[in-house]
Structures are given as structure tokens and as C-alpha cells.
Amino acid sequence: MAEIYSAPKEVRLPKLDFSNMQDYNKDCNRYISDLVKHIKDMGYKGKNVGEIIKFAVADGYAEYMVLSMKPMRLIHIPLGDAYEFPYAHLITAKEINQRLDAQNRLAQLFK
Image (cartoon, rainbow, N blue to C red):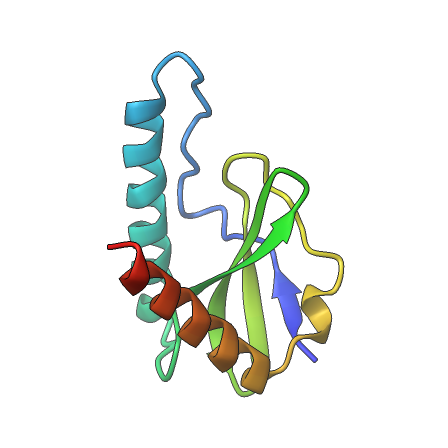
């Protein structure tokens, strides 16, 4: 089972701006990079740390960043609609590895 954490307030969230989605998407990418740097600066290292897993929810995705694999810890990524997956706390390390592998294969397919 996984522990789910809120994103740290030290990493500034981008302001949602529907009038300029190009800048918002750039800010989201910056946020993810800053969050990865923040958790690594805190000493979290190892397999899959900083990787993002996605769960289909409604018309979008719930996104979580891997904080650690053992014990399983995830950070909820509050971007876009900030959907949450109701069963994220039940995910195992094996399922994380499978999801990341599937996401990477799918990304390669559509490159």
C-alpha cells in the first residue's frame, strides 16, 4: 500500500490561465522539473523517484509522482483539473513498474 502526500508548498504551482494555454503548459513542465529537483534535494533517490504515473479519471488523468518505492510513497500532482484516483493508496511497487513500463512503451509508439 502507498502513502499519498500533497505536493510541497515550497514548489510554486502554476496559475491556471485558459487564455494562454501555451504558457500554462510551459509552467506545468517547469513545475514538474522543480518538484523533481525539490524531492531529490531532500534526499529521495532510487529507482523511479520523480517518475509520474497516470490514472484515467473522468475526462483526464490523476497524476502522481513517485517519491519512494520502498516504502511506497506518492505525491499527488495538482495540475489541470487536479483529479485524484480513489485507489491510489492501494498501488504496489510491482504495479508502479508495470504502469511506468506501459506508459513508456505507449509514448515510444506515438513518438
